[in-house]
Length: 210
Image (cartoon, rainbow, N blue to C red):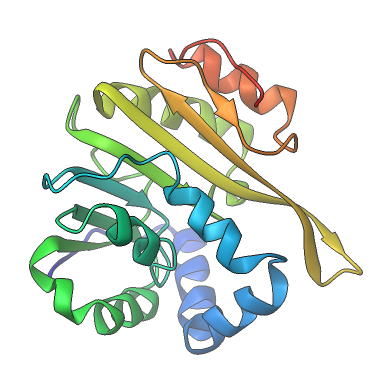
């Protein structure tokens, strides 16, 4: 499993990396406790991805320990994954979990805001439980870059949490699917209108609610 370090010297980035490094050991247990319908939620991330034996290119922004990758590999056994995360400890957990896929995963340590997303390089770009850490001002240029990074017909899949039940379990989640040429859809009506507007202004097709 190949890896690279692209962390910079920005103090806020270092603080966040340290925060997630310290949470890495208990992260998956925490997510299983926090996310209602945990398995269904992560399975839904992979739902828009078509089954194929082709080595499709997938970019995972803010991958953490790779909870979504298990479901992606179920549908695309030969997927080529580039996984970007600030936390070296999270990436170490991912590497350990998917040791049998070492030849198919490239690990990048650093902020995905700094990652150079190549134009028309990716069949799918996914981001799960990561975008809520960004401000609207940070998201808009990133969405532009994501749109340009997709191959024709490619999809961007974003999964977020929107609220907590009893301040501990997520009561609603949103899966948003955005295509270069195809209309955007969301599987649950929890994505804000403002976020859809930012996505549309980045070049994606008109929003549709499913």
